[in-house]
Image 1 (cartoon, rainbow, N blue to C red):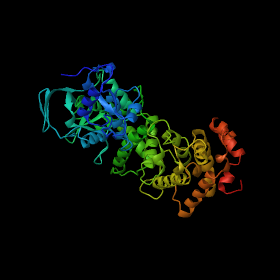
Image 2: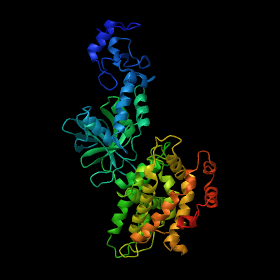
Image 3: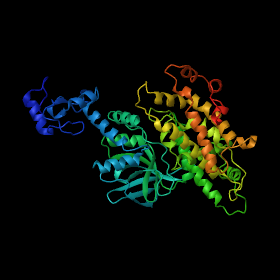
Image 4: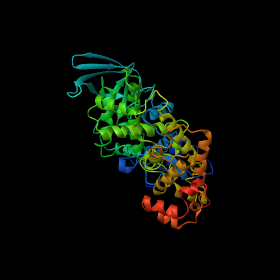
Length: 503
């Protein structure tokens, strides 16, 4: 029989609780030292139907009891565990959470292989542990077959890129979203199933991973799902992107959109380059080929995919040090001051040729690989000479951080990127108008790259970046790009200075 909690715990009550839990903080399980007082709190709050009984009371160390604030103890405990998971890395997906929970002993397995057998309108899905018999449906538009089922975590996986195959998982897990859904599902139903497909005899989910993650933290181990059996990945990926972009209330992060579109485009690009049709292979030819393959894509959508492919190629280059400073969201963060949108309107705009070329990809005229190499080199110069010193924990009086914060504000970076391009073109003796729109679309020698580095060094060493707090530069950087660029020139940050002229 549970012991009813009185208004104030007496020594016998406290002894009963400590006997049950030990002298350990319920939040993390760490020991509470003998010299430190033990505090007590409800595991499940009254607002969540928690009962006023000793079995619903647990010991807490003073620090964690203070940190949890108004959160119920159980929610705070999960929040700490969730934070521990998110600290394991970046760009985490449902697969990473399943791996984490398996390692911690919360689940025994996931992604178990399955077999399927169809008989009439019924499909039987069987794993080593379970058998599911479900009604089979067919999409009237695509004729893809699918079924609905409540599936155990043992047979579920995340539809990530793996084994050299492109996955359909469009998002990374976001701590705030998962925790908010975790609390929401304590009192509210799940309205829509998660969606997945069969790949290599495994069920991979690509829609609803935040939902599944939140339910996992709530202790749920079975999940309502809609599973496609024979879908075509390219069309399904486009449908998935549209569902999370123009038809969604909450849209893709720019970084996710770039990576998903770039990956799909890259896979199609490889198929095109290997076609044996006797025609010269060019980027412009590929765009025509892609338009014929999918008449639903507009010219603007094709161009967006091409640009995303270029951006992805640069950012996913293993040598690119600046990539670590690019936020996964549409907004910069204190740790990651750059976004793909900002790079698109600054460095990529100035140094990447973002139109499909007519150059034969099998000849020396095709210089896209050189351009990518040069672009990564430029970004590494900026990172090594400036951005590597970014310190999100520096005080407001830190001169180095003040300088970097000014350099990498959006209007500032957009303005100096144009000045940087002009100076680089000057240093590389690029004066022809057609060449200036694609300054890196050429092989550069080590000596030429050293010249580029010197221009970046001049940019980083411009003395006004280090002006005292509340200087005019802080007011100007809130203006539009043209006004910022003009102000830079008037204050000495001009093409001549970047090329080596005295300040």
